[in-house]
Structure formats: structure tokens, C-alpha cells
Amino acid sequence: MLNAHSKADFSRQTFVQWFSTCWLATVASLTGFCWTMTRPDSHPVVFAASVSWGVNLVVAAVMRDVLLRMDPRRFGYAVWEREGQVYRNAGVAAFRSLLRHTPLGWLNPLVRLAAGRPDLDHLAREMVYAEGTHWIAGALTLILAIGYFVCGHATIAGCFAVLALPLHAYPVMLQRWNRGRVLRAMRRRQARATASQAADQGAGNSK
Image (cartoon, rainbow, N blue to C red; front, top):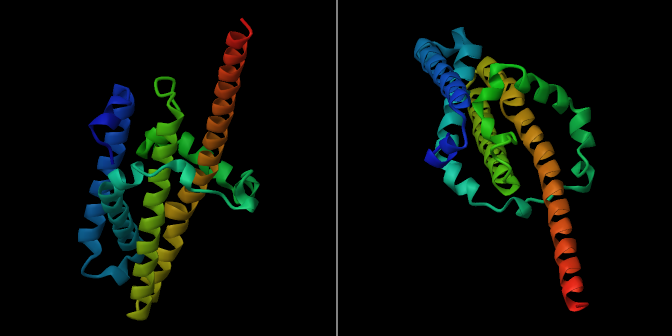
């Protein structure tokens, strides 16, 4: 979800792409839910996909301000994921390519670095927001899966669990991979700035 500040970061074309994709996905989700809510076992995939999108949309809207206020530097990485090899082995690069070459990538253009948006700190915060949204929505989706399984709707539960992989697990891995790269770039930039400042101070003291 976007606020007025976010819209200012958009070109007109990007905003139209984002709005159109979200609008179509939401309409499809509402249509699918209304069609299947009285008989979800007859169309479990449609029902689970519709509910999953709705959960993601609500979480994205409710949690945006909270997640954007979090400092990206507070979220460390385990030793095994720092260089991102584990994510490359999991196929995250292919998932990223899918997003870059299909309208699915229009759903959150703020997690891509554009020429008009060179602020790495802002980009890292958007990535924290995207990752946090998928963590929360994914957890809620799995709770729904467990609930439906306990109530005897194993097929619906399975659909929720399977859909959580492309809808939440891979987006989380992608954002963690990308955010690690952005944080490393921020550290390099800070190191260069510190070195330049030290050099300037040394030159001033020698005069």
C-alpha cells in the first residue's frame, strides 16, 4: 500500500501500472471469494488464493507505518545467509527474474532502486516493510491452513500451505537477499564518507 509520499516517488506510468495491477488483483480476489465462500471445498485453490490476497492486502495497509519506522540496520543476518548464496541456491534469482519481466513486479515498485530515488536508507526501509508484511501475512495464512485442517478441510488447508510458498516465502527470501546487498552498499558508502572526512581533516590540520 502507498501513501502520498510514496506516490511522489512514482512516475505516472509506474503509478498507473501499480494501481491497475492492485485493482485487478483485488477485484479478482473479491470475485473469487464471493463465488466460493459458500462452497470453498468445491474450488479450494480459488478460495485460498482469494483469502490469501485479502490477508496480504489488509496486513500491508495496517502495518505500513509501523514497519517503515523500523531501522533496517537492526535486522541482522545469520552467518549462513550473509552472502546470499543460500537464496541463490533456493532459486530466488529466478523468482526475481519472474517479477522483473511480468506484471507481478508492478505490485511493489518501491523496492527497486530507480534513478529518481537514490536514497538507499529509504529503499532499505521499503524492503523491511515488504519483508515484514509477508512474514505476518504468511504466518496468518499458515494459521488459516492449520485451522481448516483441524476442521476437516484438508484440501483447503493444503492449498493455503502451498500458496504460501510463492506468495510469502519467496518474497521474504527475495527481500532479505536484496536488503543485504543494499545494507552492504550503505556500509561502503559510509566508509567512503568517513575516509573522505578524515582526509579533509588531515589536510586541514597540515596547513
